[in-house]
Length: 296
Image (cartoon, rainbow, N blue to C red; front, side, top):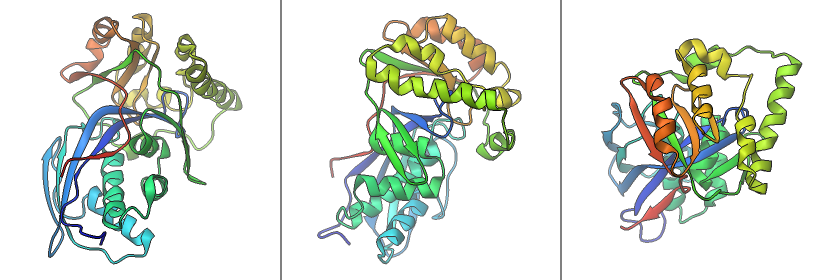
C-alpha cells in the first residue's frame, strides 16, 4: 500500500455528458455534480452506498475499477471498505458508470502512492469502460476530446459564462438497448456530416465563437436512430435551440437532454424543455472539474 495509508481523503468524481451531439464516442464534458467516495483498509471488501438507485455488493463498479487499477500496477489487491454517496442519476446518460469506474481506478492510484498518475487512471478506466468520451471528462474536467485506442485525451478550452440546463426524464434508457438501436454501417453522407460538425466543437471553443456550437451539436449518427427510445427528444433539441441555447444534445445514450446556455438564459431554455422532462427533474449545472481529493 501507499506509505502510511490508513484512510484516503474524500474523492470527488464528476458526472459527464458524452457525444455532445456530433462527437459520437469522441467528445465529452464534465458537470459539477460529483460522486463522493471514501475508502479505508479492511479485512475483506465491503461497500456502503447512498444516493441514486440501488447498488449493493462488492462487485460494484467502484470495486471493479479499483481491482483493475491494482492489476494494471501489478499489485496485490488490498481489501477496502468503500463508502459512496452518488447524486448522479443512473442510466440517464450522465456518466454514472464512468464516474464509479474512475473512482475505483483513482483509489488504486492513491493506494499505490500515485504510481498510475492521472493519465494512467484515464488509460485503465477507458479500456475498462469502453467509452473514452465519458471517462476523459471525469478524469480531466471541462470539455475533452478522447480516443480509446490508443488511449488519448486532450482537454479543450473552457468558455466563461456558460452553464448546462439538463432535462432528466423519469425513465431510464439502458446503454445496451441504446447501442442495439445503432446500425453497423452508416451512409457516407451522414458520416461526413458528423465529422464536419464534430470538428467545429474544438474550433468554436478555441476561437471563442460559441455561436458555431448551434451547428456543431447537430447529429445524424445516433440521436435520430435512438429517438424511438426517447419520445419527443428531437423536438426537445430543436426547442432548446430555438429558445436560445448555444447547443443542445442527448447526454450519452440518453434520455437526458443537455443544453449549453449563456448565464441568464437558463430559465427560458428550461421552460422549452419542460414538456420533454415530464415528471423528471431539471438540473442547472456548471462545467465540472476532473476528479479530485479533499480533506481526510
